[in-house]
Every structure is written in structure tokens, then in C-alpha cells.
Image (cartoon, rainbow, N blue to C red; front, side, top):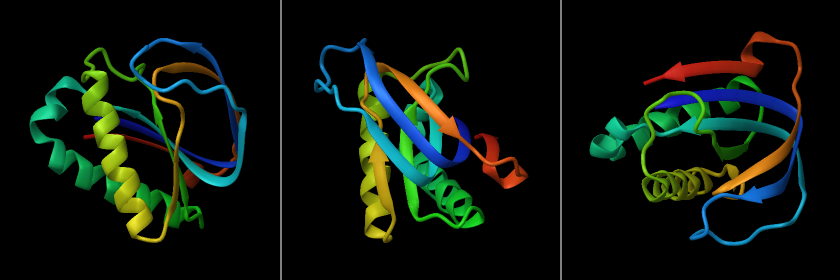
Length: 136
């Protein structure tokens, strides 16, 4: 798994191009403040150990949120961090599981629309804890 975490004072997105027909349609523009945005790439090797990956991802997201004084996490599929990609259904299942676990731990959690190219706007402060890359 590849994980790029960016803390954002403000993060917004607008769907532009749907690339995976099997996922729901989404057209709404969304603007969020004080959020930890997780750009996530689940790799093919992660499918076999998905419960381990889920737990490790969850721990890293909570840690990153705490470092940035936020209780709001955004999960974003970003299949550009590695040449290896898990199938979309496995990645979406992981996202759904992590979202449920974050909400059960009193975090607010959103997912960007799955299967879309998005226009995104990232307003991130210039401090080291605001940008974290993990490879596990």
C-alpha cells in the first residue's frame, strides 16, 4: 500500500470524468475544512492481507489526524503512486471498512467519489506534519 497524507486547511473536489461505470453517479462539488486527506493506492499484493492492511491504514490515519489536530479524514483513491494496483472492488471494500472503523472511533470520514477523475483544490499549510508518505 502507498499512502500520501496531506493535512488541508481546505480541500474541495468536483467530479469531472467517470471512469468506472459500476460505481454511483456523483456530480456535487464538496468543500471541506480542517481535514486529513489520504491519497491511497491499494496494491495487488495487499489483497491477500487486506485485514492487516486495513488495521495499519487505520492506525496511520488516526496518527496523522492527531498530529494535525483534526478528527476528520477524507479517503481518496489515488492509483498513481505505484505500478501495482488492486482491483477497484477490493479498494472500495477497504475504504468502506476503514470509514466504518473511523466513524466508530468518533472521527468524521468522507470518501471522494470512487471511479472518477476529480478537479481538486488543496490548501495545505507549510509544516512537516501536514505531508506524510508511507509505503507498507
